Image (cartoon, rainbow, N blue to C red):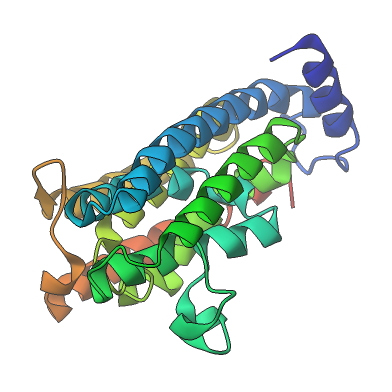
Length: 272
């Protein structure tokens, strides 16, 4: 982090309301927030590079390659989603679903990953997708540019861990997100990775405040990771539509429990 960005971050932290805990001060938050910004920057660089390969395959008309790259390309976005969602216009352009638009798949405003997913997996063709590929590439680059100049609000960073798991619990377990490709488990793993990173960076502060809570969260992450590991297949995961209803129900409880625990994290650090 440059000296100037460090000062900007420090200034923003000093504006945070008085913390509920006597142990956690704004200065305690500087390093983990700084480290998280580095992590997000790394994820967005991976997203840009991956999206370039993905969209190049689409432009070349290579359906099989584009299909293979779809899921892994999305993972960095899922890891960095709490910060990406601060830019609602780009989040909508990059990651909205057909249901978010009046005319669903036929709506011109339906763009981004899921519009390309629809073409690649439902229509099984790259025909007509080049404009959507070009727009996705431009939007991903713009996202990277905006995040580079962003001062990360500590409460948003810490709250991002819960937000990632709440999204999985509330909507993704139904299979609605990657409904054409059924690559949902890749997204799950990206969300878990992103939430784990936040907890890991703030873990010394969490342990200092409530060691029992930290141990419980660690155990809950382990449970979710073990469940996901059952569905590993090669470098990726089983298609989500091959999971039975019992398999999906087996995910609900642990993911919900983890999300509920992580929702208390901001309070533990006095950031509510």
